[in-house]
Length: 198
Image (tube, rainbow, N blue to C red; front, side, top):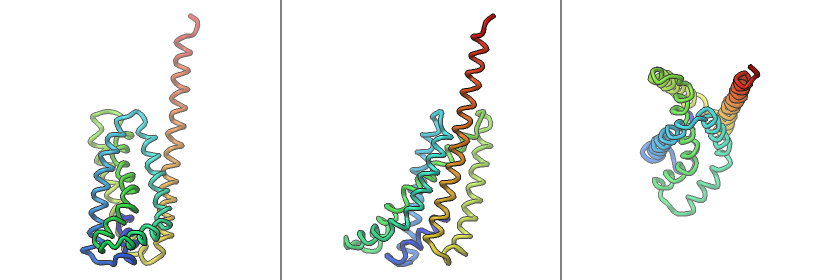
């Protein structure tokens, strides 16, 4: 939600701030990108390394957020040079700038549910927890962005959000790798015990 609010602010200097044009493009692209992310996350969660996929998605999304301030001017200027009207121009710019990080963030919920679930009977509860937390975080991001962050530097806000997302993905990646090494060590010790002398 924070990215959605900031997205309208990023595009406004180039395509205006009309609710019917820029906001329509932003909301539409974000909904479409999230649906792609949910499908992709559900597909990736079927594999044995859902935790690793979750960490990589967060790191990649965070890096893209940090890159948006550098991409905005060349992308928007290039689209304006094509002569598209503000409707299609804002929609294309939004697709280029925000569809990939939004889709990556959309993969988080299904992979997080899979990563947290230990038994099939727990999947509904884990899904409820993940969805509740993501919705509360979305509310907080929307309010804080709309009330405060849009009044500050959009560039710094994107960099801060991106850096925090990368850091979260990095911590998760470290946790997954450490847990994987422990699992290998445990399996190795069990094998040694089983193969030991009688």
